[in-house]
Length: 218
Image 1 (cartoon, helix red, strand yellow):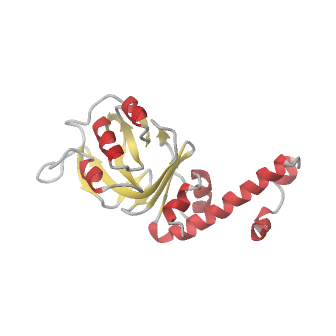
Image 2: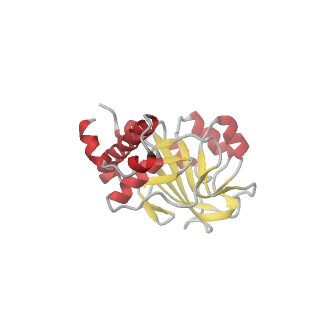
């Protein structure tokens, strides 16, 4: 039996966003773009929170290193960088470390740097923009694998993440089976529509047909 992560990898962000919408959950977030390798990222969230002030007692490690050390295949590092675009919250050594651990990719609500290095590594980063300015003295990791907020969406460790060139979406772990199942139905519907379009049916008819009923025969 396929795992939920494997099933998620067979979808795209648009189908997942539509499924979240249909189920009354928050759809894909806005403003996060592919910065390096343009390929789909899907997996379980390992979370990092960054802030402009260090935590009580000072910062013990370089930001992001806890996440890289603890994550592995099937994981996506999700960084709450508070939408900052004046300095990086992710960089090249972190990308190399994550690639060596077979981590699926990074989603950061903010800027990242060393993008050429990530491209050479074929390591996907989804974020707000590239920037060369260092985090040193500007950004500190204040929590790791705790609830964070990404563009208005709460993300818990272990939630599901999908990102592609259309956007980034988060699926609460408790609703993952329901959301992914709904997204699979939406994807099947769209395939039926494309198949009929290739057969020569007018697009005005295809977009108006009740394809939901057709899903029951597939």
